[in-house]
Structures are given as C-alpha cells and as structure tokens.
Image (tube, helix red, strand yellow):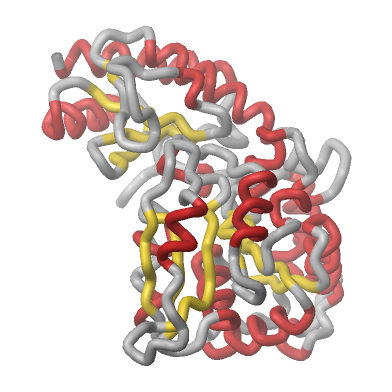
Length: 366
C-alpha cells in the first residue's frame, strides 16, 4: 500500500479541503446538476463567470476534462490546434485531442517565460483554402506555464496574440493555476483571460478544494461544452457537495484560499534559495532556467521549484528515494529535473525540514 509522504511536495493536488470547505459540503443545498437545478453548482458557476469576466461557466470533475470539453466545443474533426510544445494539453492528457476530438495539434516551442512567439504562431496557421491542410481552429495558452518553473503569462502577451490573430480565431487558456498567475502578477484574474474566448481553472490544486475544475466562456460556448461534458460522461447529479468547496475557495475573506496563494509563492522562493546554496543542486536547465550552472532562486515566482542534482539520472533516483526515507516527497520531472510544489499544508517548518533532508540526501548519494 502506498502511503503519502509526511511532507508532500509532489504536487498541489495533494491539498486537503479546509474545515470551512468540509462544513460547507456537509450543509450544501442540493439538486440535480444534469437537470440544471443544483443551487450550489449554479452559485459556483455564477461566481466563476463573474470573477473571470465571462458570460457563463461549467463545473467539470477535472482539469483534463475541462480542457477536453473546451476543445470539443471549439474544434471540428480534422481541425488543428496550436499549443505550446511543453504544454499539458499536448503532453499530459493522453492525446485526447486526437482520440476524442479527432483533431491534430501543432506544437510551438515556448520562450523561457512560457510564451509562444507571436510570429511563430502566425506562421503555423494553415491555409484554410488549401484542401491539403487541416484548418487551424484554436490557439492554446498555458497559464501558469509549468515547465518554465510555473511562470505567469501576462495580460499584455495575451493581448498581443489576440491582436495578431485573424478575426474569429479563438484562444483557450489552460489555467490550471490561473489564480497563482493572478496573485503573482498582482492583477485581477479577469485580466488574464480578457482577450481569450475560453479558459479553465482548477479548484483542486492550490485552491485546496477536493475535486473540480471550472470552464468559462460565452453562453453559446458553454452550451456546447455542456453537451460535450455529457458525451464524455461528466454529467453529475448532486454535484453541489463538490461545488460547495469551490465556492468557499473563491469567496473573499479568511475562508477563501485565493489570497493565501502568496504564502505558497513566498515559501517556494525560500525553498529555492535554500536549495541553491547546497552543493550538488544545479540548474534545472531547459525552459525552467535556460542559462547558468547554479539554481537561480529568482526563477521561482509562483509555487513551483524545478531543479536538478549533479550526477545524472541514477543520482536523481537515489536522491528522491533518500528524501522519501526522510518523509519528504518530490517527483522526477521531464528533462532530468526534479519538481517541488508548495501548497496549503506546507509551512516554514516543513521547508526547513525539507532543506535539512535535502542536505542529508545529497551527502548520502555523493
């Protein structure tokens, strides 16, 4: 039987609901969401749409389903999607764009800030008049962009992309950690999707709800996404039990979990600074830190810390095992990296213990 590590930095998906969430779930007014009459789901969807400045919203069980139903609502069979080369939708959602949507995907290499160069996006748009070509049907942005140390994509970039794209070309934001981006940039979350046609965000990562993601967009788009949700088996009944936790997460005041994301970001910087001072910890390389041999703590601006250990794959495996023996969980990440993610439940004490465990693990594996 697998047991979670005592200090679990594997992901912010390991968060547990707060006491306020549990109480709200226990007492949530319920209906039947497939019939459209669960009052708590309706309240959550209204809150999400209002916060993000869109007409309508749709609760879905997972972020992957949120992206999938968005693709289904935007993209015809045989269409093509432009997306960042290291994006979750391209690499980590079981090729559902091909299997379910029946679309292709054209990956565009990102900058170290997680942005696809606008010129490269424009160059990738297919000639719709040529019957040999798939029809470019959607452009995707990931915000925060995980593989760049979870960098936040600015509203200015989305605006530049929107202005450059042909009229009618939709933009979808995979905003699994969209509220992290808003907090890191100090802007309203609606600014991040103002120039996008649709977006998703996760309730079950840093916001600490147990289950759920939300899709937002126009009323017409959400109607199509709702039909797509039913097609892939995402229709839920008394889903207000889940929506109640999401409502708490998005509320203002001490019970809400949006503003406290700044604590996660501060702790990630402390962790990055401490790791950077340990011999054997090196730059993660790739997009997370494109230059320099030592880990640069300044790259940690949200709740991700990506780094590497000197010595290659075998030492990385041994280092992670040595951390686990000391009650600390991190995960191997692509391109030889290691990922640590701060979240609700991780405080200064856990960061101190993690740094001590890391120093011991490095010594054991030298």
